[in-house]
Length: 166
Image 1 (tube, rainbow, N blue to C red):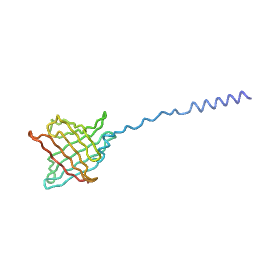
Image 2 (cartoon, rainbow, N blue to C red; image 1 turned 120 degrees about the vertical axis):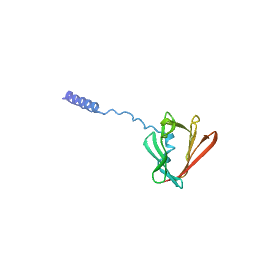
Image 3 (spheres, rainbow, N blue to C red; image 1 turned 45 degrees about the horizontal axis):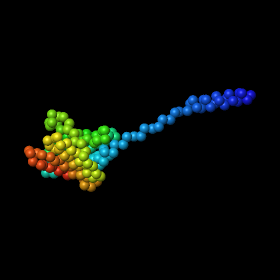
Image 4 (spheres, rainbow, N blue to C red; image 1 turned 180 degrees about the vertical axis):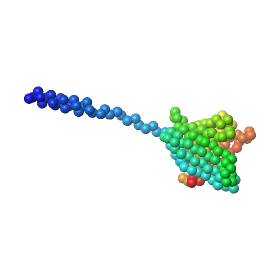
């Protein structure tokens, strides 16, 4: 009788331990801290003026990529400028990569983030002709100023784009 009790006890322990699910430590989600500094880009921004309407839209594609597009429309339907932007954090760097139809043989141009604060992000590419610096300034939660600068026709030149959140 004693041997039966020991047998069933051992059998029961064997069953419970063999069915125990092995737990593996969870891999923590990767944090993209540089991209997170640009979270305020997300949404639609724009500005209407006598010259036309500027629109810039940003959306989160995934944890490491934001996608942006901007365009300038004159009159009802005449888009005179458009660009597509990929803001991506990889290998510890944040890159602002822009593709403009009809420019640079349709090839993307990358600008690396050189500084970031709560209300300003600076991207630079000293090898690009114009612009070679792109700055986004968050003025208020609902307004920003995008600025591009560099040498244009051999002279320092800066363009500013004031936008409101829509």
